[in-house]
Length: 171
Image (cartoon, rainbow, N blue to C red; front, side):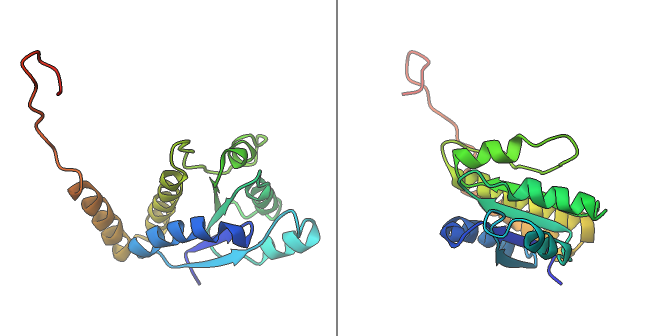
């Protein structure tokens, strides 16, 4: 069984999903991917799909006002599966509100929404999932993957001394 289930709302989300999958790969997190729209498969079909999920971390990534993260959380609550975490990653501004504005008792993690670069939000979602997977499993491969990711990221941005001009300003 994979540690993380990634669900995309439609195949139009493939490009963004691949950004997420790259992070999970780099952090050595086992995952599987499904495409399952809560809008197209609403009702018992979707509830039956959620009921069969074994993974303890579910990431939903999608745009255009996805209702799936809240629906998944509500179904899990009704199934008494309180040990499963739902992460909602918005792929656009419309998706942000649908994930943020959920009623009490419908917990969904959202790694923020970077209005300048959705890619940043997706990467943060992947890192959040990797940290949760590490917390659940204490898997050294995931710990090493996360450490390597952060080390490599910071190597690209060394501390730099800025030489000021004669007026004490950055030229």
